Length: 626
Image (cartoon, rainbow, N blue to C red; front, side, top):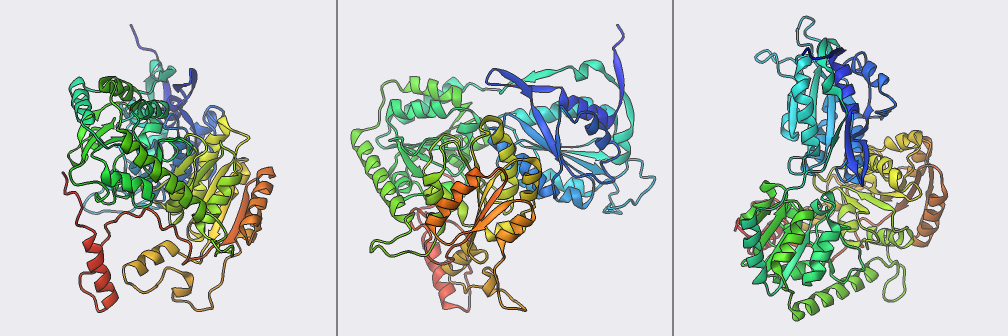
């Protein structure tokens, strides 16, 4: 029997295949690829652009302002969609492609699906060297696209149209696989994009994908249960993987059945609502005293869906030296870290069977009382820390914590919060009282400045699908705003309204704080401490936002902020609220486990030498891989 074929260019085949991939979500079949973001140039407009135009209804294309920000938007969308759907970003060649590199790092670090379609030099090499080609005389096949190999889960250069028959299924498998999920990079040489091939028609038949769920190995499960049953002071670390597994209910039920206190990672914020009696706060460097005190005393730790990043573990000083760690993770790499007892499996399937294996086991009453006290102390501290007035009734300098507390007070339960780099991720993690499950996106895996507004744009596009009447709230510092703000314009053009809260502290204040805490003088972080040719001055963020079509205002107090937020909620387009916050006072003091940073062993400064000694003294409880 002769196989039926259809003759298409490589670019046409690629787009047609993407349009034929579906995924089942909540019993409904939707396209796995929700569309993409694109800036066209000579490397992708003539062939890939032609193919995308033919499928513009099935795969809507949004025009961004910068390739890096477009890919960040795709990452933000995937995160909001809990990795169940993805978007692509396409670039022309050369600098347009290298702009994608940072965003690939975000997606790789956070295990998020992102498809990058980038132009490449001609395979024939007949016109070499071409515009934007970086030549390597000793390796003519090498291009800037090869730089993505370190920040992708799957990388390929399509040098012949037939390669798509292998490469595209591998691409989709990578984007949807729970364990290996991450960014995919496809280099598309400009000549090959237009070459035609007789593809099997069957290749383009619609296909529905499902979230793969792996059951745990029985022996690993038994070993984990045996260890947990010995616990006198058990503790659950709830990571972001719980949300991607859609297992928040299973985790909550497990904790309540066995009466085990829960602490959250940064990525795992909003696994539990604040009012849950077992929610004992965020863990680690940017955490709470409640979570960190419990972690120090826990004898068995069940880490679920976390890669145990240094901010979670306090560079591995957060736990007792003899504490046993059991991990539940779909990725074997994450499950076996620091000689943990691994249970490789999907959290949604694993937690119920692990609960069954534990039988009637429950944490001791004394441990629960200890956790309840820590939780109450944490709540009281938040009341104090987010208050605009001191104990004597006087006004305090406006701080990140006060801003966060005010927005937290007046926002709706299903509003979504986005933060990324600088001081705000720590302050949001420490001070936000979660009102609904999965409502917080703090990108602190790659800690990428500029993600806030661009990632927020993508998150808003996804958030609108389920909660069109709720808000996507962006917390951003003046430093990140200055780095990447053009997607305020994108959000207005696309009708993806955001509320952007700009906290202006005059530069990179949190790094200035780290600089001072390690004995160094303030230098090159706050604008006032930089080499300048003029007197330092503040940016008019309100005027700037208005110039991009947003509504905006500047406020000067917490009460004004609450009133401005209500106006922002009524606005039909993106609304920017700008305010000054103090660069030195008002930082959250709770939590803050030790964090390993390099400090000078030798210095002319006595303060630096003393800080080095003090910092190294904090290393004493650090676990050395066991």
